[in-house]
Image 1: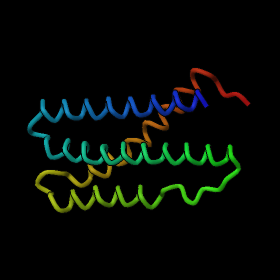
Image 2 (image 1 turned 180 degrees about the vertical axis):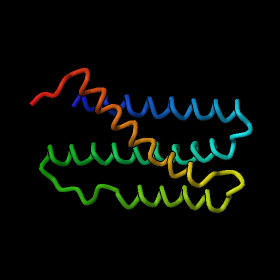
Image 3 (image 1 turned 135 degrees about the horizontal axis):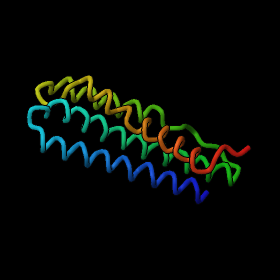
Length: 127
């Protein structure tokens, strides 16, 4: 379980690093503010979805440990958050580029895959 917590902390930390880089680029390149605002909006919601997913996984782990059942994985709330991000981009197209909001929504999945690949290279595949 400690290794899982280290992975969760690593994923959150690097999501925050990516968001910080996006904010820095937003301040540095005013010509690309609409694109970077879309990335920031999508990545912020992606970070929230990552937090929700990790929280639900923790709850499922504790329930399995106590041999209880868990009602749901929280898919609806993560989808609703993604839909809200897209609706914000559609409502304010002068501030947010829709395509980059959608790309930003996938940021947490890229971080998850990257952390898995990094884990494989550091520890090798154990069976």
